[in-house]
Image (cartoon, rainbow, N blue to C red):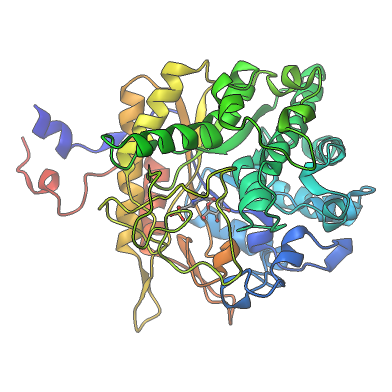
Amino acid sequence: TTAAVQRDELRFPPGFLWGAATASYQIEGAVADDGRTPSIWDTFARVPGAVVGGDVADVACDHYRRMPGDVDLMASLNLGAYRFSTAWPRVRPDGGAPNQPGIDFYARLVDRLLEAGITPWATLYHWDLPQALEDAGGWTNRDTAYRFADYALTLYDALGDRVPYWTTMNEPWCSAFLGYTGGQHAPGRQEGVAGIVAAHHLMLGHGLVVDELRRRDTGADLGITLNLTVAEPFDPSEPADVDAAHRVEHLWNRMFLDPLLRGQYADELHTITAGMTWQGKSWEDHVLDGDLALIGTPLDVLGVNYYHGDGASGRPHDAAKLLGSRIEHPTRPIRSPFPGGEDLTFPRRGFPVTGLDWEVQPEGLTRLLVRLHEEYDVPPMFITENGAAYDDVVGPDGSVHDPDRWDYIQAHLRAVHAALAAGVDVRGYFAWSLLDNFEWAYGYGQRFGIVRVDYETQLRTPKTSAVRYGQVAATSALPPPEGGAGSAAPAG
Ligand code: GBH
């Protein structure tokens, strides 16, 4: 019966990968050690008003020095996989020649993970572009894509025999549109359709790497991670909101999905951006012959990061920001991350919200996965990030409880399971994040970790969510919700 199913634990398929994720700039600190040079985030975090509280990541979680202990921590939580990112300014400082001490850090990390029986998953770009390359134009300069390929192949040559999963880019939407259109993220430029030029060059860098590694016939699984949204009209009966959702769908999801999985940009994207120019040119002027073939090189895996639902509106609403969160963004003025999107708003729709005021909409993840499965020739998918910022409850004994985070993770694991039941090929899940860390423009005030970090002492304390998640990772099964109707029902 249905009741029996609800009472039962949910089992995930054999081999399903259970992990946690981090990113180099958010945890490593040690920003000047062993030859590392500044990234765009070192610079941006020092722009007045760019980051809440003026926080910088010079120390962060001090992971660069505490890496062995952090791997032991992962092992103690039964994690089967660890998704980390590598810092370009360590591996090729200033975007120039390879730097052996920087490469060695990641070699030590990978070796330690393998010794602990944890599958390493490397992400090559999680937003820390060498500042020297930004000084030469950053992602709006086509040459950056070629420099990225040089950097990626340097690391692949060093670690390709030991790392089975490689992600080229993490969330190029954020790099392109928060970085070059809205200015919420480094480098903080607000140059309209330059965001699409940056997006194209990010995907070109991805394509150059995947194409080269394909020709080497590597055994590694190659992919990219996208943050995708379920763009719904705030009020489906309002034409302005239907149009808003249509534009968001194209300027967020299909901007990346179509070139990567269909080898072309959608006709609607050209229509939506018609007449927009940057430095006297359209974004299409930057798409050269052969680019789309490279970008459309087949992938082995697609990474999906999912955090929240979005209801798009084309009308002003009280308390609706350019994105949607009512949590105060830093004081530096920001613009819409959507080119031509200054009229777009994302009013809250009454869903529960996280500490960042992001809408908790787990069934949106099921719908997103099913939709990708139905509409695209999509490779096996992994949830490469999912998680939430909430305040922890710290007990007098130092124990840390985070029931809201565990509810959030459970609900999203159920959503993944529902997609599996609908026939979607999902192969793994990574909690964001292993550790509390530098949450970009929100600094250290917003905690996403399943492990708490005391930034004074660097003490790590697993939260309730880490313990519970570790049990799921060990058994590949999710127990019924505690205290829910299912668990209260009598057995048999
Ligand atoms: C990820 O990006 C990053 O990969 C990771 O580094 C980061 O720490 C983590 O998420 C948590 O932020 O203002 O309500 O409109 C998240 C992608 C896209 C999530 C934009 C927030 C805006 C929400 N982000 N979205 S709202």
